[in-house]
Amino acid sequence: MAETTLIDPFSEARLGPVVLRNRILKAATFEGMTGGNIVHPQLIEFHRRMAAGGVGMSTVAFIGVCPDGRGAPNELVVDDSNVADLGRLADAVHGEGAAVSAQIGHAGAVGAAAGMPGLSPSRVFSPLAMKRTQAMGAGDFDRIAQAFADTAERLAENGFDAVELHLGHGYLLSEFLSPRINRRQDEWGGSLEKRARYPREVVKRVRDRVGDRVALLAKLNMADGVPGGLWLDESVEFARMLEADGALDAIELTGGSSLQNPMYLFRGEAPIAEMAKAFPRYLRWGFRLAASRFLREYPFEETFFLPYARQFRSALSTPLVLLGGVTGRESIQRAMEEGFEFVAMGRALIREPNLINEMRDGRTRASLCIQCNKCMATIYKGTHCVISGQEGWGPEDLRRKASA
Ligand SMILES: Cc1cc2nc3c(=O)[nH]c(=O)nc-3n(C[C@H](O)[C@H](O)[C@H](O)COP(=O)(O)O)c2cc1C
Image (cartoon, rainbow, N blue to C red; front, side, top):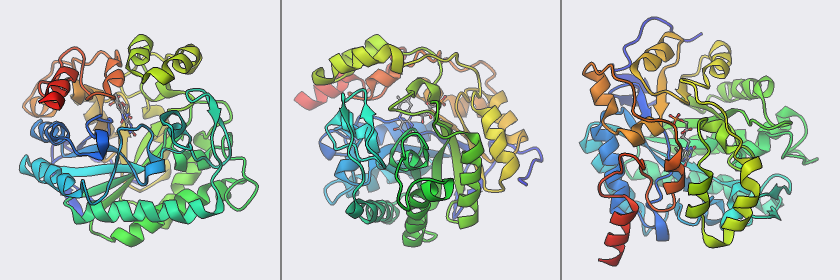
């Protein structure tokens, strides 16, 4: 069982081979600052500012491990042309006293709406792309596992302290776990053991390649939020398998499916009008058609994933990251009291990047984030809070910079 004595969230903490200045992580929130497969200066500034705001570690959001692993056209794939700039990003974050992580993954079926084949364990219908996805072929298994290891290694060689593997949100590795999506009848589908085989193999391949050069985390779905999807009975069992494999330094607990039930992972308002406007023209029709069914709303509650996350805490000794509706000091303290080693925060830090410093210095006022989720619609043009804006990387700034 994990240590449950009272822990100061603002004290140093070890995450695998890395020491963080505190236990608060900036969760991956896709920044939309990598169009053209370029690390735009705004991306560096985004993470420098999160670091200056006090987090222990900032997470660069979704990096595809290969071109067909992108979930949106403006997502980064690490290559010779951008790896040095990622190194500069790492330097900027370190300069502010924080560590830096990168979330890597293969978007699987989610990529179908972005013009990718939308590889998935079995063919599924993508309501956004209005087409069926492509099932993984024999050659894809090794190619994609290799791409995970290559990407993690390049990040480790270029200043990153941690790598987060995406095993959630209906992306490829979480699709393997889903009994609803993975209908394969070969060695990669069927029983939980078989559905778990590919994600476990990828995690082990990455660890074998990076060794102790970086901390390795997995962002894991506890529940897909769809009937017939992955749920606690199997996700806890899968987490036990990961623990037995011994390749991870921490597991960050999430839920929901970008393809089938995205609001499950956010809670709060569904920003349908804003999303429709932000979507590329060719997707708007499909989006509007699918939105009311697909963007089902759930009321927001502080630490909304805690009741599920507790199931993992009681079953595992692996360090755990509590995510989902952590917005204030009390929630952070509560997470520590319940035995979580870390918390991760997304929207509250988009709203107020300096929140952690202020809480450390005694702020009691609640977060200003109202979970309107309109930041979700800004991910195509530079992720920011539509209430506060973010000087330097709002849409107008990006347009001005692009035309300069
Ligand atoms: C604008 C935005 C972009 C996001 N992008 C990603 C992403 O690229 N990868 C990911 O795993 N989660 C992503 N998320 C989900 C967050 O990491 C987090 O799971 C979710 O916002 C719940 O945490 P919170 O209540 O602290 O915001 C995104 C969230 C937002 C608001």
